[in-house]
Length: 210
Image (cartoon, rainbow, N blue to C red; front, side, top):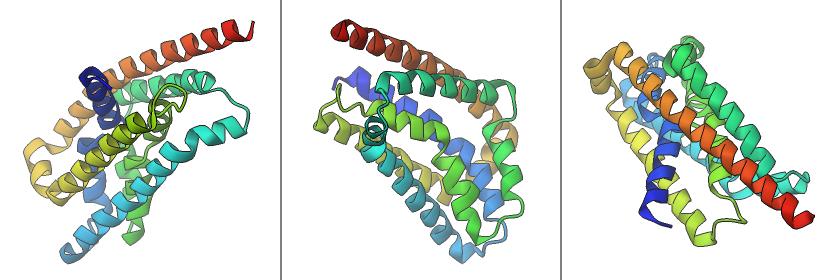
């Protein structure tokens, strides 16, 4: 795996997990949580999100193949969904705005919903980890590298949640919204690339089957 691939995977996973955009969600979800319990609250959310994403990273493609679905088809469908998700980030409500609404009435359970899901382990993140770990194109070592990149971003997310109050004061809701929209533009590019790769994969599969 070359540096360009590593950079692409890091950017893709960073955009779909969106650690910066998760900060306002965390602050609202944890606003009724005692300060002494906020570290435990953030850790619980990260552990749950990690279990979900690692589960799909390991078993996602196996599940698709068990259902008789080709990864190329999943790449095209996933790319379309990621593109729609990106359009919503750019033109619609930003990620914080939509998920803060869910968090406004949460208590300790807010660590699970909406913080762990769908804020950290978002549908886009689940799709991305399955697409990036194609068993037919990537060796076990390359998939392990992708898992390492995923874990590093989740660790970064945890650190950012621990200093969320300071970051929020620095960038504000408007700053988080702007960053989320910029990430939406990057995600749209990633989505188009996934669609193209899926179409190429399906075309090659059709050639071999002919």
